[in-house]
Image (cartoon, rainbow, N blue to C red; front, side, top):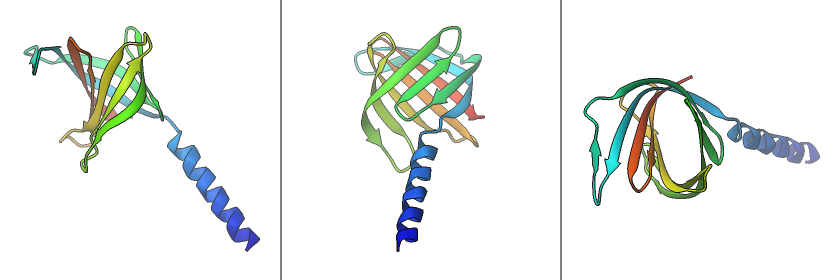
Length: 127
C-alpha cells in the first residue's frame, strides 16, 4: 500500500512539473488592427515576422524588437476547439486581452493581443 501511495505522489508531481514547462512557438505573420466601438479595422496586408513566443503557466512573453510580457489574470472563455481568451496585464500594468487558438493550418496557432485602441494578431508555428 505504501508503494502505491508513493507511486501516485510521484506521478502527480511529474504531471505538475510538465504543465509548468514553457512551450515555444515561432511567429511568422502579424496583422495589426485599430479597435473601434464594436469592430476592428485591419491593415490590408499581413507583415512577415520572425519572433519567438514563450508560453508559461501564467505568462506569455513575445521576443521581438522589444520584449513584451503578458500576465494572465482570469480565463474569460474556452471552447472545444482549444481557443482560450484571457484577461491580462502587460509588463507596464496596462489591461488587455489575450486570445490563443488553433489555426486551420497544421501545427499553427494564433495569438491575439487586444487593447482598447489596437489589436495585434500573430500567426505562429510550433518550435
